[in-house]
Image (tube, rainbow, N blue to C red):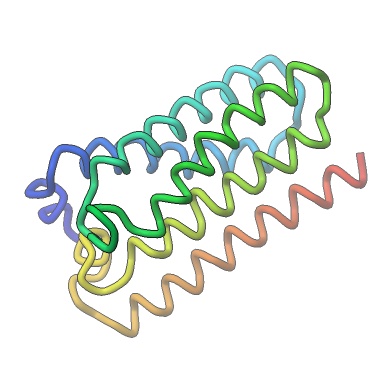
Length: 162
């Protein structure tokens, strides 16, 4: 692993990675810890702010130019912005079930699915994490997906038990 490719990446990519990295870690923590506490509310607001910065910064990243500088992954950014607003609205109106569903979807889609695409060979994060090793990239992508799925399943089970 080397951070060298990030140092030479465009500023938008650096901002994107600086926001999404803590969002991935904080999101996992929030999904696994007790809900409704003052700490959960504070960290949840912080997580949503990081997700919004992540989504907004993605609109300045045009490495996959499929349609006027954008790619299908930018649809996830639009969904993230909309979902963030919906998650806040649901929590404020006391619809915790909807809030939890949206937040889980944001984490799995916005961090998990989009994150897996960043590790495709030829992308900056692939160079950061794997330095060209294809089999390690595939294995790591599967492990990342498995961990994200386990977090979401565990979070859903805890909700049913409570």
